[in-house]
Image 1 (tube, helix red, strand yellow):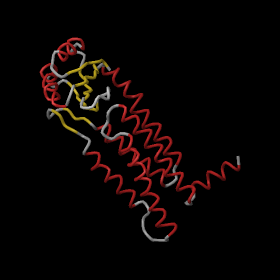
Image 2 (cartoon, rainbow, N blue to C red):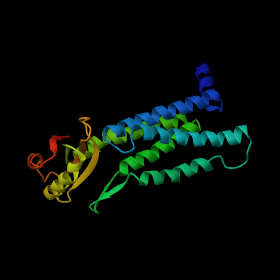
Image 3 (cartoon, rainbow, N blue to C red):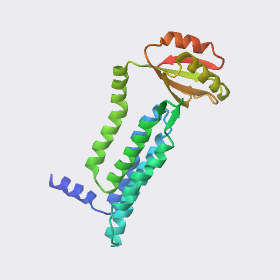
Image 4 (cartoon, one colour):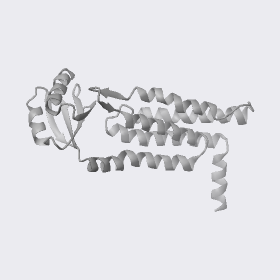
Length: 228
């Protein structure tokens, strides 16, 4: 027990081993969060979340290095504080407004902000907080997403479009069927076929999935429609 406490205490100190561990953990944590978002076709996927987490951890490490190794005066949290506000500009590029009524990308932007704060925590050696934060973040975007879908009783389906030239026609057909009662997310094609485009669609139960599917399949360029 005493040896474990010694190792944990050593890793909380500012040394080469703890620096390498913190950067490695930031890659792992960013990868876990990014993998989950990437599965849903998020713009901020695997690589983006890793870079955000590692970058945030580096700001904490730089602050500690300036204070502990170089002995420079000043607030060691100042650089990290800029990450919290600066990540907002990156997140703003993910948030989209469709049809002047539907906002998409908020969860991804918020998740990227959380990834940055976890990276900061790792950089300062706050392993416990980073671990709990990662579990909460992943649980929120997986388990709670399923719960939210059940409580809202929404209809979710995926449509794959053959070639990008047919996307506009497919979107117009969706708008004519569902009007503005929908949330759209354009993602890479799940089939992996080059040139194809995928669309995740969420709408209310007042629309029958079967009728939506049959109408869409009559549209040129739509390869298939499957319920999510």
